[in-house]
Image 1 (cartoon, rainbow, N blue to C red):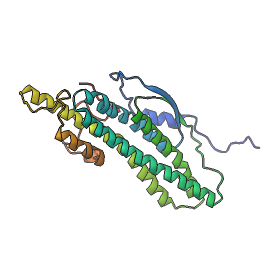
Image 2 (cartoon, rainbow, N blue to C red):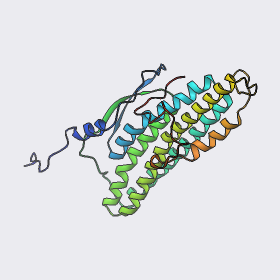
Image 3 (cartoon, helix red, strand yellow):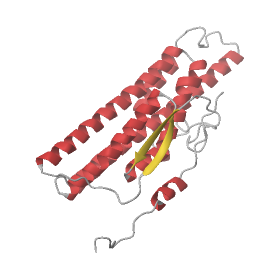
Image 4 (cartoon, rainbow, N blue to C red):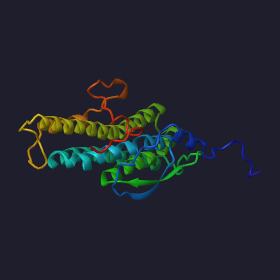
Length: 257
């Protein structure tokens, strides 16, 4: 009787459907070495956020840290990198506090077992291009760890379904905003690089260059704007929409100049 199974279980179909909906990111023009890291996502939220946004972040961050640095002032690029790292540090700390808080509620209510998923985990080997990419992957793993803790607390009626939904949605938005912020930053830096080319073409002696070491006021303004305000895709204006060649990086890679 112990071997009788009353329900049909997932045999990998869920992961296949998730992967089928997303186009493969094109890394053919990325020449950087990557550290191969094996990782696994069990929650629906962790799987989908990883598939949709990890490579978006990697491509945007590579453009900022590698390509933009060859043409723009190094100090300005460093400010953009620092803003993204600070954003990720804040989210990681918030996730750590949420996980610690959930575990404290487990102890206080005598809960000893965590809800588990009947769907197969998404197990992949990830090519991590940079320390920022590694940090973003860690954030995704923390979110994946938090999701079943929240669901367990809801099952035991320690917290309400509404509270779970609010916290889940908030963290999903924050994790998503990191990748969108990197993409928007890369788009704006691309425009800055194009503007430099235009000024040089018309002989503007005030053009900024890496060699000249001059600081670009517009570049400094971009640092705060792109990270603090990520436009919603459906509400993007013509100004916020990425130019040709910088559409959703899952479908169109950020190309080198």
